[in-house]
Image (cartoon, rainbow, N blue to C red; front, side, top):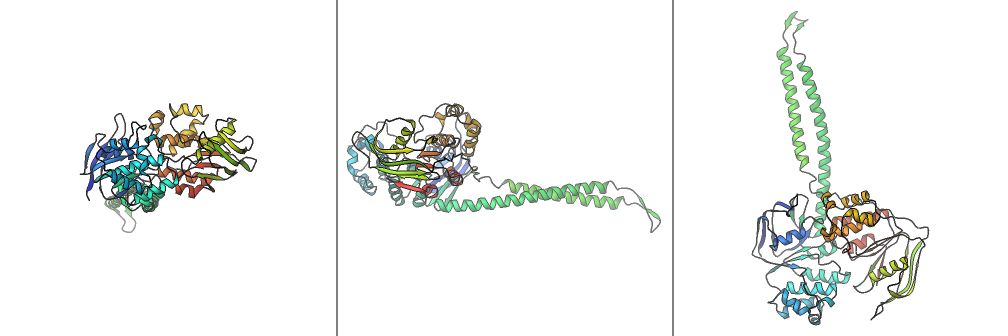
Length: 499
């Protein structure tokens, strides 16, 4: 076991107004199974690049480890997989990779197929097998679950559960819970390391946030009380000061100079006021140390329409036909208030069902199928696709093309943790998570009877996933979804359709 020691790390991108990291210090052990958590755009992938030596920075990162990164960039996917392996790791030992592939339930015949013909799951497994066959390497695993179906996620999760010595970036809560023993989290103002899995960290964070909110409310009330007491003490001192005059004592019938007495009383009043102000300053200073790392995941809004018909979609014995195969027939109904989640292995037809339904609604017939589709008349649909490659230009241009309320669109993006500075950027320069949030915000702006979302949560951070869960549970829209996040599906799905 060795350590990765980060000391006084500061980094910013050229032309950026703010530092990504500022004077950050922490240590991690290289035999940990470390989950890496942060909001989209907070710097997870950037930090991995710093570990890999791909960016210059101030401060130091000290370690004897050799780092390797997932996903490996494949320049020519038409090459056979064994040639890709050779480029990844020229000193590879074939038997070790085969051993890892056996654990991942992949046959060694994939070596002799073009890499591009492998499924997303097979490609992920091959790269992980190669990386874990390297001795004494510390792995940086960046979002391995994107585009993986539920069975493959479980297999990769169980595989990682047996390993150690990695940093895992993932937004899938169940996945993290099963295969990490420490958490590295980028907060708003610092980076912290915790022992435990995602649930352990999340419960501790909720308790800390609740404590800070309660302490903040108490201090806010105390500051108000001290301010009022200080104001009264100041007024009383001024009133006493104004009485510094001589007066005649009726008892002794002689003039007594009361200036000394009044002066002492005034001095005590001024001291009391200053003590109150010092207490107030201490309370303000204590209050200012609170709430800095609370993620204010504001509630989102949705504008679902209720159709006058109860049944919005009825699909009977739908069998999609391709050149070389036909998918098994599928039947399902979607009624007002239903949230139907399509699940199954990649290639079983989840996205194809959505495409056929959308084409039916648009009066198009590009995909051949047998069976019947009935939809309610005048059905309005809001659709989120898996693909974000069509996003280009400015947010204003996108809102205009999609006929969105621009002010509402920006407000929703702000609630999804977009900074105002990001509003000025072109969408081509956004991260994958930010692009997904553009699609989600656009869909939330749209009044619809049916929301069709195809893997909407790929690249979306945990805090935003929780926001979206709360939104769906509050507004209860009618939905058809493809999603593999187990926790999300358990929380919001009313029907899970296994294909």
